[in-house]
Image (tube, rainbow, N blue to C red; front, side, top):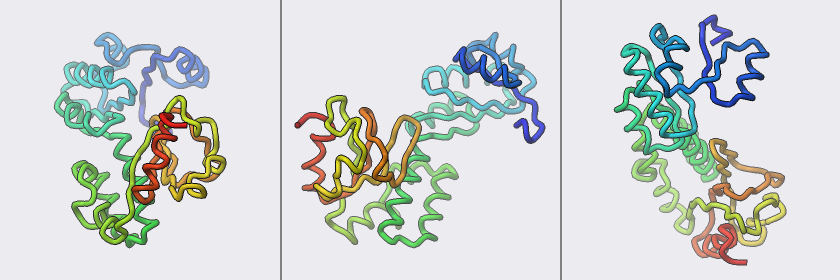
Length: 235
């Protein structure tokens, strides 16, 4: 916004962030975007657009609802972590909702399709349709061309699953190279989800942490052999 000459105000509840950005000259205030007074102080009545990027789903819903009440004309763009939140946020008054889960799914699945020689043109079409708001495409991957069902038809032994690393997992704190899932079990880590961050096609030096979601590709019997080790339920 600054580089485009658009006036803006940042609202944040992290005091350290507020101090740091204010010292750098950013127009930031320590306030809660879910409160009427805070929104009014930030100038919601005159705002043409509002971007809401809050990790807490309840706080996101509150901010959308109250902003819409104070300014029926403002264009609201909201970020959410989960696809299932999209419809609810749109009903509350958001004009556009960008799910981080969608972007992660698009990136991960694009890499998988590329590895299995799906034409680049098909992958680009998949990405464009998904990002244009066709969220149902993500929910039903494989029903159309270029989906996971096609992969399983062409490579029947292939399975793609997500497994969360448990607190007691022997993998936690080690690198992908150290655990050697591909070397020892024939299981490929296609991506690592860590909160809002996605690490596609991670390298051998990527550290695995408790709470990470590992996207795995392998034969079903090989996946079964490592799932309990990853979750920490079996030594």
